[in-house]
Image (tube, rainbow, N blue to C red):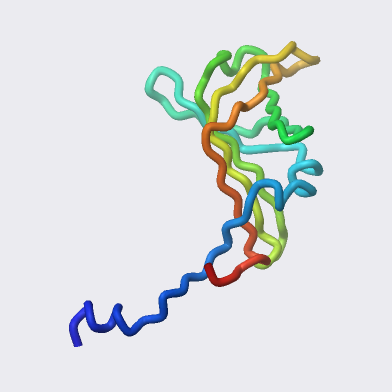
Length: 125
């Protein structure tokens, strides 16, 4: 049997764990931390960040001076303890500085691309 023959007889379905970020709104609202990554001077930096989700917007807080306004970054917010509870959202976008608050500089992440997953929602595509 050739590879073409075997793939022709395979079912045309795939399993996905993909969901929309809105499907994970409860997890986003309750999360207080995210993992953030960005590039500075050719070096990739990844570190924890304070996180808030309000009215469909993503806000991240960094130690003062750690990130420049206008930086392109990625944040990941995830949750779940067991396999079928694992879920998360990954957002890539631009960090827009808000007013400093306490020990943090706060930014709104303006999304350019978002993906979300939830293993408890595995289904055929």
